[in-house]
Image (cartoon, rainbow, N blue to C red):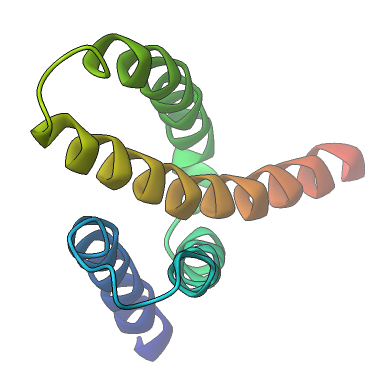
Length: 113
């Protein structure tokens, strides 16, 4: 039960940091990205189970594709977009780390069959 709670809080904290970090310039970017990456690893290990692995990985692929293209399209708009791009970039780091763990778990399970 405690692991479920840790995973849920890691997800919430990761989302909050992904958003807030776009507006905070006092903290080094590499520090923020490292924190998001570690939280993403925790989320991938604790929150995503065998039942929803495929759905999660497909969602991550869609996010990465849309995130890359969306950032280019949105980059043509006003200054506020800079914040949106930063939020999206932070969120992608967070989710990609979770996807890394889930992918490795899926590969291990598949290779055992």
